[in-house]
Image (cartoon, rainbow, N blue to C red; front, side):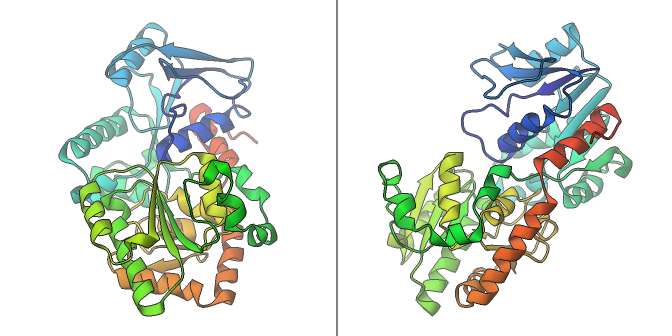
Length: 379
């Protein structure tokens, strides 16, 4: 069987959520599809950074504009494959009958005010057409499947729920090691002096700094923690700027505790691990998520999590996180303080988090994707 995989998002230089999903899935599929011919489609300037099985090859499509709809479509016309897997929600117009697409969420439909009009229209059109063209849709959560059925009227039998995973590399740091690593060791070397956090406790958010991620709510919750409880923590916000940047910057500029808030911009995977390992609490009280991978990434490193009680987050967090109402900064602050003020509860959440991540793996994710692609379960 000849299988094509759109790997263009997997090998972008700066990976965020969907790019990280694509990268980890492609990497994990190597052991599952080693007996098949597989073609990875990349853009000009991209390269694979891990070894490939003998039957795998890379095809660079040098189409400068509308890469998917023109470049990848033309490739499907001239050199068709038996099955095509699209891990990042945009199916080309020309595609094989057996095309499988992953949809990561319909946040732009649920929260249209958190997206620009062009972005909302692009996602609506591309994902609607992708759902129509694909033989099977992979939804990353039961919540996303429900949204596809309710909002886009997709038949439930066309959708397969396959949860995302969490990287194995995150499991190499047991709780005892995490507690013994000081911020001074992590941040006071030459490589990380830009953070200037030193030996200070901090609350951490990692993700795109945009309206949907509730950054203003996080800032206001931090101010409540300072005002009501005089917590010694700093607040660290790491990630690219997104839609709503102006509003967030105004909140930061006008805030009473702006000197205790650090915005780091985009960080690498290595830097992400360093920041997470020394965080006191990971804050992820976003308004809506298709899955919520950062919750698992924090838990895998022994960091207790405060997250929202909406969308897919209860599905991902189960009983291993402190929940809050994302629309109420007081609720976010109360959830965070319940962990700061109660060491036993905090330790319990850490232990539950480490157990929770065992439910998710990229190996399991890849196995279930292969079952959809080739119609058999691979063990």
